[in-house]
Image 1 (cartoon, helix red, strand yellow):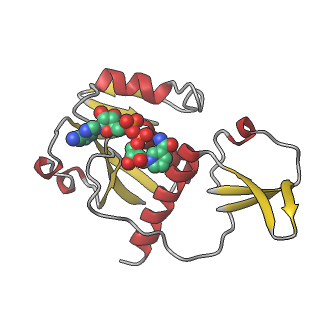
Image 2: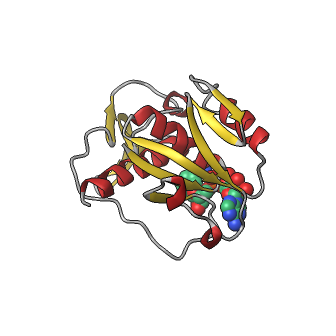
Length: 177
Ligand SMILES: NC(=O)c1ccc[n+]([C@@H]2O[C@H](COP(=O)([O-])OP(=O)(O)OC[C@H]3O[C@@H](n4cnc5c(N)ncnc54)[C@H](O)[C@@H]3O)[C@@H](O)[C@H]2O)c1
């Protein structure tokens, strides 16, 4: 199990945490967000107007966020360099504040199974809510405007697809250690 910290518990921080729970390979052990208190973390993790209720248990207990029985250490620091991530057991930290953008992450090469999807169904955008693919090519929706200009249509859940790639990246990094 890869142990990670999450810096920033907004849309992406919460969905990375959900994706980590679903992955069974990544465990969130620490979360930092100076603008969201523990009780509000519980509420926002539990109820998501886009992705629905969390299908598991979440509560606040002894100053920790407890998800499916796993206690997560909570920090409320504006400056991430003050946080003792390693003491909380984190091997990696997901930067999901949108504030600290100087280090770039690069995705690894690999087969596109589970990443690029394909459909011939007549779908609309809400059919992809909660879809973990990065993109699903819609074979029937393309339009050839002329012989040289073809519009292709591909769908994705920008929050959950991205969050799943973050989890994949951490599993990949851990496998290369
Ligand atoms: N939302 C999307 O669909 C999406 C998709 C892909 C990538 N992203 C990227 O993910 C990042 C986060 O986006 P988001 O939509 O989750 O934003 P968000 O505003 O929902 O969440 C940001 C969180 O960071 C917290 N925060 C602010 N300053 C902080 C600090 N100093 N220390 C710790 N936490 C702090 C805020 O309280 C908030 O909870 C951005 O870089 C965004 O570009 C977002």
